Length: 313
Image (cartoon, rainbow, N blue to C red; front, side, top):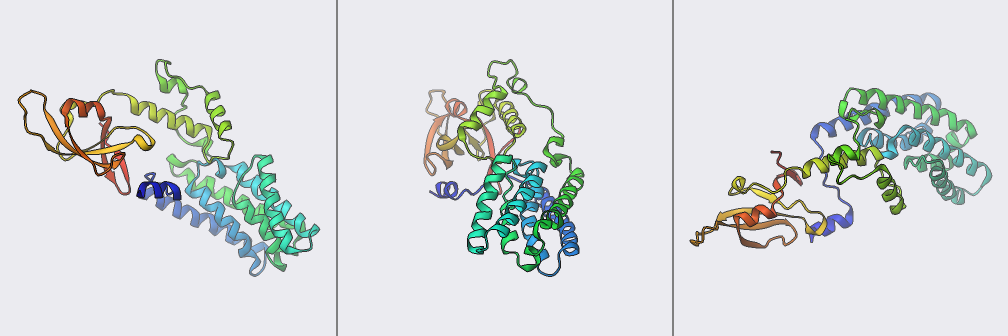
């Protein structure tokens, strides 16, 4: 029940290290520090911090999700600039702010779609052009250059420089230090090859923006294929008190805990007692032959914070 609620709410349990979280925090601080400086220099009073509001959202993407599709340079630059143009145009042409505000955000989303630069904070940039007060509306179309373009370039430069010191999170994502992966490499003998066109087709079938790049999909595919190597779990490596997963997906996934060895029935087929602690048939228990349990088990797992993590051999 709790797992279904988590899925419904979209709570992500992907494991991220404390180091990565700290780096994201420091990066966002550095990015916004540069934006605040330029905002207060070019825009007086409280108007500066209205602009910073949209850049704060960009900082979350650039420093917490630097490899995401919505975080890349064209999404950042194109998203903010196109939204700024739309926002100023709506302010100029539509005198009623109650109509201009939603119109600016709606048209900004459409513009980003067609320009292939979806960047969620762009909606805030368009909205600020309408409701940002006299300090913003008085700038007219110069709002696009100062402060929007200047702030975009400031946070972009900071993202490139800051992330350069952490090899696992280069920015832009194209510069990430990872081996060039192809589906053929992942499949090894080529018997289970997924071509680039397969990924492109799958994404087109979803018909919605997904914050993942093609290179990320290939990297994930490579890791999955490597994890599949090794075949059946070795029955001799099953240990009392340890946890094992069947490695399946969705509703079929489950984790079992070996709680005891069953009494020898004299048949020579050793048996064990297990309890299902996660996934399908949770809270159930049973008795299984060691050979049968080994056929069911894909690999050993451990509980790590809020998620189950595979134990590397």
